[in-house]
Image 1: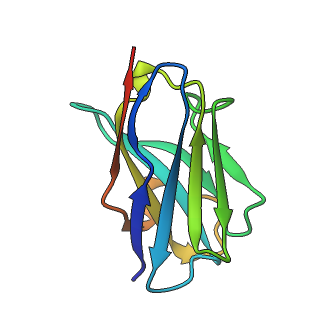
Image 2 (image 1 turned 90 degrees about the vertical axis):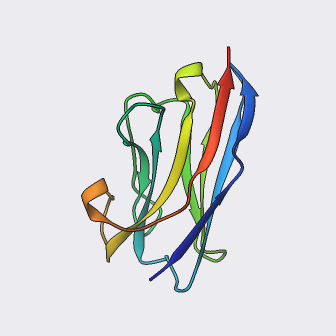
Length: 125
């Protein structure tokens, strides 16, 4: 079982940027798709972005396209989410997730094997 720890959340003004990091330990994540999800108050958790095991394929929710970029550094066992042009509706707890099975192209919530504890992102308008 891999352990995931997110960092980089915080309070930012609308239009600003944040970079979230997800550090993995316990095993390598280099063969696993990784993803970011978020949950806003009184809403269901939703998919934000994912990256395949090789780092070549990336996938985004419509709300994230053009503003967010997911990347990975397998040497550091870490995944990132660069968030630009933040909006108040991006306010949520952001969760890092590791796929359950290796060599997949993406990770959906049903495919998640491990979750991080979450990091709060608050965007003030």
